[in-house]
Length: 74
Image 1: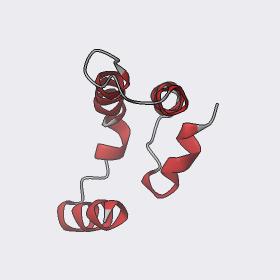
Image 2 (image 1 turned 90 degrees about the vertical axis):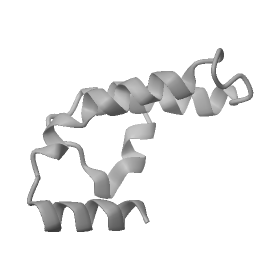
Image 3 (image 1 turned 180 degrees about the horizontal axis):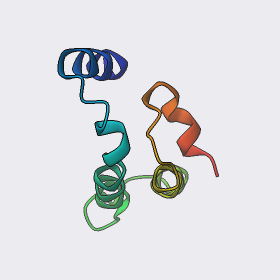
Image 4 (image 1 turned 90 degrees about the horizontal axis):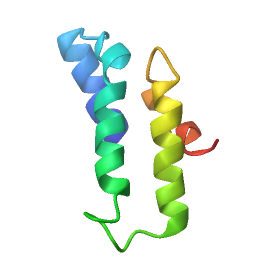
């Protein structure tokens, strides 16, 4: 469903610039989800992957939605 959303959105809107500007949004959302204040039951391993995602997504100029799992490892 995730891939389908991106593919349809990009095809219908032609807004490929989204992939160049979505990184700060994902970083912010990742920080919220990784916060033990808001989500205290997330495991340490999951929290680490969220922080890896945040750091990795901020390191790229264009978000690669087709290979999102690569952002989880550091």
